[in-house]
Every structure is written in structure tokens, then in C-alpha cells.
Image 1 (cartoon, helix red, strand yellow):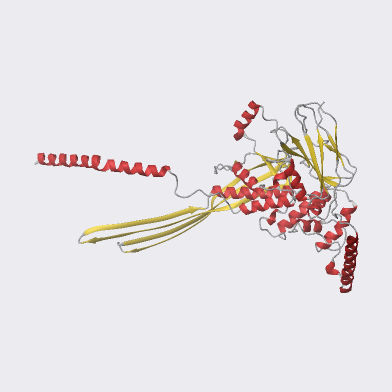
Image 2 (cartoon, rainbow, N blue to C red):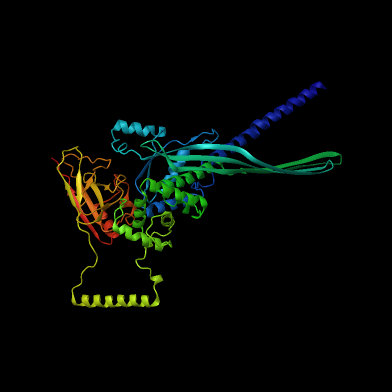
Length: 538
């Protein structure tokens, strides 16, 4: 009997070995190889651009920078560390992407990403001797900050229910919801003194939700004394993504920081009502700080200029043109009559949605019927007189044209500093470019980050570089550098295409003198003058 049992076991073992070894493993191996080949091609779903609900806000900031003439801000950024030790994200790379999206057209912010992660680039530049322009300009500001807070499961809520019928049927259902808080603190400091810029900070937090559902049950019984059982369990869980929440916070912080730094109405891009108490308080802080720093008048002058109602200098002087515009501005903004430069005027200019609105020289809406009829009659008579005069005289261009400026420079030795003097016989707006024909490069040298206002006063010589903190080196004798200056009767900065503005001291991409001339002619409606100066070598 024992022998038969052993023989049976041996036969079963041999059959099993043959079945598993020959009949199962080989097909399984082929199946795994086929699936591995499919997996090599990557996921079925296509990659998507990583966008948050701040994407349109960033583009809005780009437009704000253009409208307000913000340009040539050089900013360094520190590593944004995770001080909670719970988030492993590339925070500085997220900031870099946000600033890039925020300056696509305006080129307002030039972000320097110097740090430990560019060591290969730094070593290569030092070894190749090609770092002449990398360290030429010191950034004016530095961004610092960190992920400062991470509170897990600050709120938890759980619901569950169950039912059973005797020993035959059981059913369970549960739902879990919990919330965590992530906070980011960022600020901007001055590179001159390493002082924190008061008010130029961002501290925001975001709520990250996690939830899950589960349902399960069991059914037991017997059929003809044969017991059976069926069990089932389904669950689903999801969360809003901590890393994506950090990206949203960083994009929000970049809008806040640069909006506060440049004092543009960033809250419009965030959809916040200008009459919100927090916004009104911030506008009041800006007014107080600008007034204390003696920068209020230049700020108002710039606001008037970008609205095409002021063509004077942005220098803080109470010149007659500026003084005459203030009462008209107050009237156009619906403020009480007067010439005060108060917080109401400041807030009205900041929150003015349109940049093309000109302040009326005479408020026609307030004229009586007889006054309006008299005004129209005078215009009609004047038009008739002009037409009769033109019919008797040859046609002449009525468009004013600026006079050319004078560029003066002495011969320089190769490698020495170049110094130029620009003079004008009338008030004008000046834009100067340095051309180096060997590489056919065009660099904007004026206006620049050190002298952002292109206005040049009558009989007021401008020294380039002068007191501006940059240098222009003369090339060797075979290089024929030339400086070209364009001057106009109005500020055409915002009317120039993005490619012509570029960044100061940076080569314009694929530019020629003809293209530069065409851009200035289009921006000024043909009212532009051109001057040039050849750099002479000793």
C-alpha cells in the first residue's frame, strides 16, 4: 500500500514539474517581454504643459510692465529652501519659470540664477575667459525666502456606516477628508546694504485637501451543505498635490513681490477690488514712502507721461508743464478742484484702467448749450480760414520734426574708456545704441538701468557714461565702433517693438541699422532724427 502511495506521488510531482516548467513559465516570460516592450514607449497619455490658475495673471503682469515703462530690473535669486523638511520640490526653478512667463514681452526683470547648480557654467566661463559680461553689472535686488510652514492634517473628518443581515451579509462604507496647510515667505532685499525693502514681501498659505472613499462587504451561505463566501472591497483616494500647491504659491509671490517693488497695480491681475481695505492701505503706504523718499513727484510725472499728457522730464521738479496738468488730472479723475498732489490723486492714477485716456484741456461736458455752440462756431471759422490759406499756398508738412542732437567724443586709445557728450538745442527724448560692425551687434546704452528716463533738456549736456555705473571700452584699431542716437518729440519707449527695446547693454537679436530706423520711424510716426558718432582711435 505504501509503495502505491509513493508511486502516485512521484507521478504527480513529475507531471507538475513538466506542466510548470514547460507549459507555464515560457508563455509567462514571453508575455512579460511583450509588455516590457510596450512600456518602453512611455505612458499612453501625452505630456501637458504645467499650468496653474496663475498663468493668466503672470501674462497680465507682463502687460502692466509694458504699460508702465518698467524695464532693466536686475535681480538675483537665492535658493528657496524647505525649512519644514517635508517638501522635496525645486522651488527656485519654479520661481525662474514664473519670472520668465512674467517678462516675455516687457523684458522688465533680468533674473540672475547664480548658485551652486550653475557650477559647471561658472567653471567653463572662468576657464575659457568668456566671462567678461557675466560679472559686469551688480544686481540691484536679491530675492530670498523659504517654504516656512507645513501643518499636516490640521482638520480631519471621517464618516462611516455599515449594515448586516444575520450571518449572511455585511456591508461597510467610509469617507475620509483632511486638510493640510503649506506657507511660503519671500522678500526682496537691497544688494547695496542687504537691508530688507519695507513692504516688499509676500507671505501666503494654501490649503491642500486629501480625501478618500472606501466600500466593502461580504456574502456567505451554503448550497446543499456546501459553504461559500464572496468578499469585495473598493477604495479611492486623491489629493490636490503639495508640489503643485507650492508652484501656485511661488507664482503668486512673484506677482506680489515685483508688483510691490515697481509699484504697479498688481491686484488688477489677481482680480482683487481696488477698494478692498488691504489694497487701499497698501496704496496709502506707497504714497507715504514715496513722499518720504522724495520720489512722489517723479512717480506722478511718469504716470502723466505714459498717458501722453506730459512731455517734460521725470526729475521731481515742479516745472510749469507739470504744474498745469495736475488740476486737469484731478478734474478728469473726478476729484475736487485744486492743485494738490495728495493720496486721492495718487490712488486715482494707479487704479486708472486705461493708459490711453488723455486729460481734457477743456471739459466740454460742463459747457452750457450757448458756450458749446460758440466753441463749435470758432472751430468752423478757423477751419475755413486754414483751408483758404492752403488753397493759395503750396502744401507744407504740418508735422513737427525734432532737430538732430550733437554727439561729441575725443579720440581714445584701444582698451581705454569711451566718454561721449550729447547736446540738444531743444527738449527731446534720446535713445542711443552702440554698434560694433565686426560682430554687427547693437547695444542700447541710453536710457539704461542707471538713467531710465530718455528725456534730454535743452542746452543740458548729457555725459555717457558720466556718473552712470558702467563702462564702454574702445576696441582695437581695426574695430570701427559707432554710436547712433535717435531722438523724438515724445517718449516712444512703449511704442517700440519688444525686439528694439531689448535689455540695456545686451545685443539686440538679428538687428540692422535699417530695421532700427524703421522701428523708430513707426513708433514716432516719422517724427524722428538720427545722429551718429564714429569712435576714433589714437
